[in-house]
Length: 272
Image 1 (tube, rainbow, N blue to C red):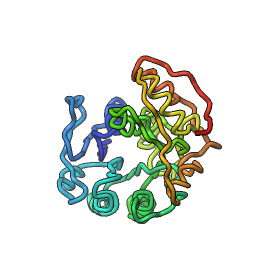
Image 2 (image 1 turned 90 degrees about the vertical axis):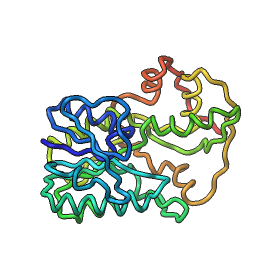
Image 3 (image 1 turned 60 degrees about the vertical axis):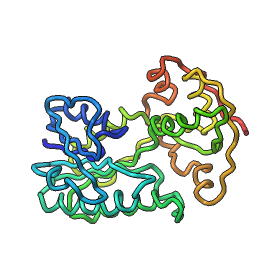
Image 4 (image 1 turned 90 degrees about the horizontal axis):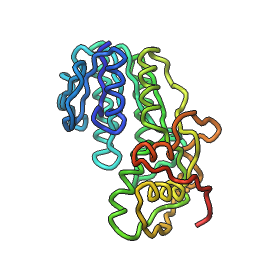
């Protein structure tokens, strides 16, 4: 099948695109920025800016399946995630796409909608767009990738002091596990809402940062960052986790060992 991956050069896309190619699909990776390394023979890249619709027709030409993994949590959120998804689905329906798959977030409907961070509320709206688009669809909610913490911790670690919300709870899931599930979703065809996908264990930010610093061989002073409001309360309560339904597979500690060659000790949570 001809498969389009939006966000093809992102954290998930970089893992997903070659797996789809290895499964025998002809893959079109689409994103605002070109890939850093050459694509395999059955993978092509197209520039696509969902916020303004640039490149949409070219990206969808001849496509059977769309995997919508593009997202912009902090920049032009509504333009990219909401309006961009609507444009994508309208054109997908017009061009006869047979299956549209949306990558959403575990617990997104349990997080409060707040004006200063509308991202989760918009994700729920995009799920509704997929369900009502007229294009046969699947929705996969996945938990946080280990690379998310990398993006947060790396710039903070340039200072000797790292302020973090240590009681926030997450359930990291390996990028490869999510990519494998999406490859299977292409083979299975439209199934509506798929079972949620989260990692093997729930971790506090305190556990995550201690493990990350150990794996990197860094010493930093980690201090509690007091955050208040409904959004912070949701993270502290583990609203974006599903501890009752863990997915077997690599843990966050496995990912750190694979990435940095040093396995952190598995430390239990403790109070700040």
